[in-house]
Image (cartoon, rainbow, N blue to C red; front, side, top):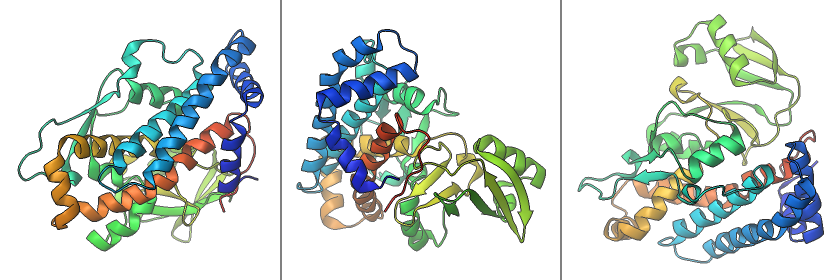
Length: 328
């Protein structure tokens, strides 16, 4: 059983060259790389430096004004992602195109600009498409542009703010992560505009662990072959506050899209804005004249805590895939 404190302790273990060499060798053996011992020896120093750099950015982000916080959080997350990539891609980066972010945003903001309506565009090459493929097995997304509003909706801790703002929840609460069963309200059929039989087929595709789906007392009861591990799903989202998984209410959001991806895209755009759209950013922080401010502030508080935990679980799970975990 592992909790957030033990994830922190695991990060501390990853400061030892002998431990990291063994850890990486096990990762490479699992992925059937030849010369796993040599590769783990060559990558151990780089792995530790990525992790140390990430921790420095994230620690400093706690002590700076919000005006520059997104830059530190974004680059801290980027270094953590590179740390994770070394567990599955020992030759990363294979070429210079991977050094780009893999995302772009509109260079100049319009006069009536609203962050919630802004979009980022996914590029064919660069870090974002590379890590979504190799960390989360997502080779292709159904579209290449994503609004900030749609990305916020994938973060379950943002639900309370949406409830206050629009009086609506964006996700269904479906079950505690340690339980071997999920429950989804029958009203999802109306939300998704789908028949019962088609919904059951959809659930079996979205949740590979599902062994049986039955409609009982106005809820779909879903038995799982094993409890969902924290942050392993590309379609269910784990709320660290109440330790429950959530499913998107809007059917158009149910394609595979890991929550780490939402945090990366939001932080990328915010980091670009605070560097290059200084006037708008300054007015936002000092005049409180936009509905964007509470959403940005709430997100930054969430991502500062959640990003290292999500990616920490990824690192931990490389050697402990069949353990059950406990968030406390």
